[in-house]
Length: 338
Image (cartoon, rainbow, N blue to C red; front, side, top):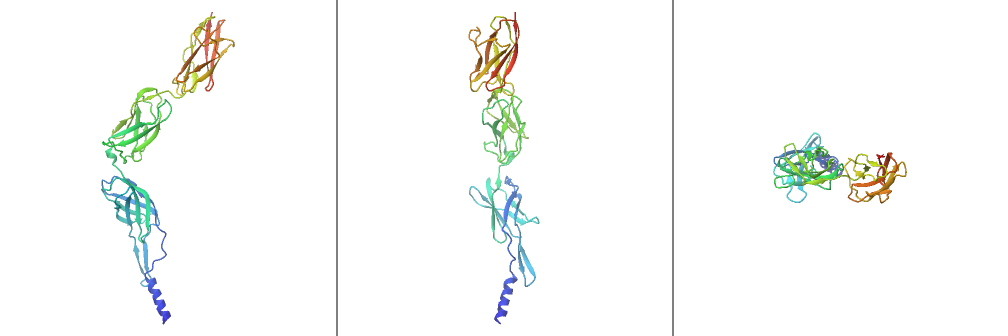
């Protein structure tokens, strides 16, 4: 008798038992991950182990499928939770839901409760942003002194009429400057209304401005800035070859430092350069009276040019060569007349 009672109790317990519970849900993404909250927004929640709960009645041979999920948004910076509407499990084992209109701007964690009461959380899954339609202008900040041919950092921010960042702007902008040499010609896409990039301007210009504009003619410009030469990378003879009379002190032979684009480039630190001539033995001088012999010349910090003179005893063609200590050498012909 006791055995029959135990068997009956076991059968009753199994009649409405659940099968082995599946793994707890894991959230991966909320798509889209941002919205403006102007109107209700349909979203899809992707993850793993998003399953219905199945309850089996072994006595009747039937069962119950429970697919009742709950989802809510939890403000990262504090505030009231927001329940998502119409949460439903799809055949793809994702969740569909609706974010109601009027949700305050900010970042939100996503919290989902499955039919067994287990809770999964995805940090910063959704952000309520200001609509891109609110863009009034762009703030353009040049973050370092621009040098011709050298990329410099700029920061761009889409802002509304009150000067606040429009974090819903995610498009790209066109880029121009007063020299017409700014590159790249476009920057973006923006992320949360901001973008930081490297821009290159190849022309020298005082009071240059960088301007960006979107597809709807919203534009903004930087404060004026000077584009100066890049660092010296070469030496050159900037003038036509010198002609000097035999036995006389020559006109000045100019030597110029240049950047990678060929612009005159002031020295950033003292630069010394050896002087050579062919045929050997040509007298070289540092002054216009040819009174101070020289075997080298120097460029002071901030100077792009230096000069020397020569005196030849006999007419003919000569070659002059300057050999900077840290830059490639340069050569130029000269003529000595009778």
